[in-house]
Length: 109
Length: 111
Image (cartoon, rainbow over all chains, first blue to last red; front, side):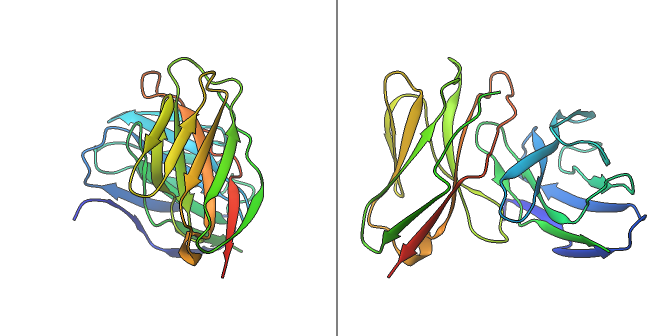
């Protein structure tokens, strides 16, 4: 069953803690992306990766970090430096057409 | 980075045809136009993509005029389940453009 998985669906953390969001795809896509969505807003690009061991900052990369050690995996770490980390995080893969995961809703208190 | 402008919201009734227009004045020669649908608390889903003229698939049609500065997504005979946010994007695979999602159009289909 091909697709993108994100885990967990809901995540709760205390302020000051780093947290890593998982994203896995078995679609054999080179390109992967991380977006952030706030209530009532569109998606904003955090990081993207065109190929393994390479990634680029998107529009709102501050306070986030990523790695791309495997083609299938593109984890996102939300660091304590991110001022407003509570949001809905979406991972996607694909080039011309992006396939999205189900999302992770992160709440930081 | 080619940005897009869409209406914030639209209302329709079941069984009607809905047309959502997107403005993209700065579209580049190599850019394609892509539309996505998003339900609450889910990731967006690809609907249709085109470069020029008209594209049709099993769920929608996409009309693109010759100057390509706008495009119209047409949803035939909408149902309540079509209530969602619709995003228009422009970008190209050739330059690995960062697609700009914007705020989308919230379509509300009423019974």
